Length: 293
Image (cartoon, rainbow, N blue to C red; front, side, top):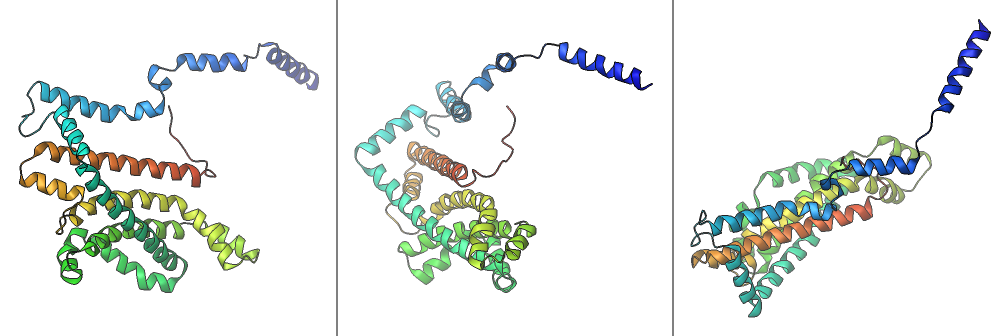
């Protein structure tokens, strides 16, 4: 019986080794040949398909007069308006004013949101004191605070910055707090077993573990910043793309209104691209699922 098993095993091994093993280069070449045109196209080009389709639909709708040119000007007219406003420097002035407000409010919101999340996430006392309060602020729309901010702070830059800061800080806090509380307990216990300092525990274990959630909060916070800017620049201002939009609506300048929408869209895409770059830099250690082709 043992001899028969030995012979059978030898035959299996011989038959297996006798089969030609495909060359790795040939396998890769065959796989690439099976890939379609879409998968061979660079991802940067594929990501532009959606915006290009929207722009093409807009242009076709204007050319066929399916869209009323008086109420929905064609892309060429919007581009001409943009060039005119760039030439006289008006567009640059408004965009610079809005970008400054968003940058200031975003930086302050990140600092405040991270500080509150760390305090609430690391200690139960901090959670008891802060978490419910932040949840209440989360449930209140930012624009509902506008009349109160005008009464409390006047009509200067203060209310505008506070609106943007509040929106960013809430998004950062909610996600970073969840990330801190989602850190693996075993990692924390291991660091404590090795008698790591509290500062080392926070900077080397807890904050890196919460980094993915922080970046999600940053993505939402940047979106909230641009949305808050719309309401912020309606508070007695003469500079900013929100003011440009409000003036265009008052004067029925639909080409400028569409131009402002395009600017908001570009700003949102740039903000998203910034967060993606930060994810690649700060989360290079994470081996996450990137999707299939």
